[in-house]
Image (cartoon, rainbow, N blue to C red; front, side):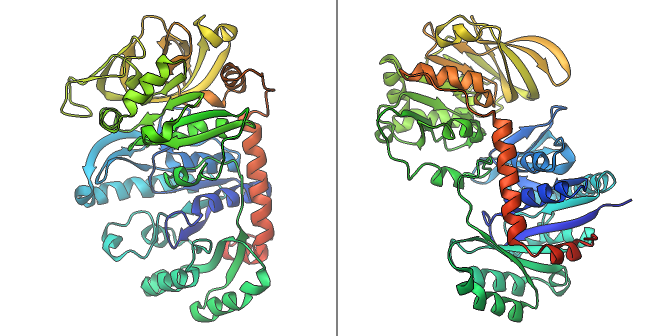
Length: 503
């Protein structure tokens, strides 16, 4: 049996497509359907490593978890990871294949399209329903010839399309009508419903606008979804960095954590568990002036470590970070941030830059060598160092994942990787200074581990904190809350008719 399909497209980026797909995955899974997400091509800073060590967009992993299934590479066969304003690493079926400038991307379009339709076919053979997410807007004339993610997918699958518009940013009626006007007639025929997202206020006052849309577009409004706060679901785009903590004031007895906003920051959802903790303030900074006097500084992952290390030096942040470290501030490096904390980064094969040797910040006694091969694993490790707060965690497991293209030699590791995927291993990882206040590791997702998070936060403050819910429990609650809100906001009988499923 071939699965039913439903596609969600938007009038723009950040209209809410990813969250709506996650909500629909959870709703239909709650109804007993086997449902899977799909996005042909994703451009994202945050990625996820599947159980078999393949890399996909974080949003599709979130959507799979909302559906109650294990993420697979077919859910996001093409992943673009920006490395510069016009260059991206192209990840195909979970493995990096090449780096392309934007102007050269169309040359690979036909090959990539074949990958897309094969992945979609495999999913449709395994599930009852596939919920497909588009990208950006389907009505970009300059991008239409190279489209492999929006209306070309809808036409290929003959998928009914829901068009979502963000009313919170203003201009939603013009955006929806304008998008429809720019579609070709056969594309408009696939559009079966409109959803207004991020609405605040009295729905009765919006009713005349909804009537206008239905009359002008000839398409029913399936629902109006309210603006949802504090969902606690991982963000994918760098837009989230602009909004995540801007309205939080620094209060007494609050752990102040400054995360360096690198130009090529990646996997910043590593720090969502910290931001969700009571008594913790997480803020992103990109200048020494903004750094202030935090309890801890975190240098996150990077898609271009050498370039971001140059940024730290040029901006004065490198000097400020080292000065704070010498004054006793905790400093943490994750993945690329770990590499930056070391003595030197060597790039003999010019994997990242034309510089063979790049000096690090010198806060950890490690050296990194870049290699062309990319390591991508789900991983389990155990704490092995006796330094600082880590002494109380020795022998305890921590789970996460690895995505990196370098190897770092450490005289005294922080962790021992004991499992990668399904294979048992014995690999050293990470390093600390003599006090344990400064440490680095390749393990993404480290702060998802509640016992590790508690121990580290307690080391920053005088008072210990209770271990809260695990991140799995937090996310399950978030998926259920999201699904309940969207279910209540949509005309569900109409949605079922659009999909072609019995009520």
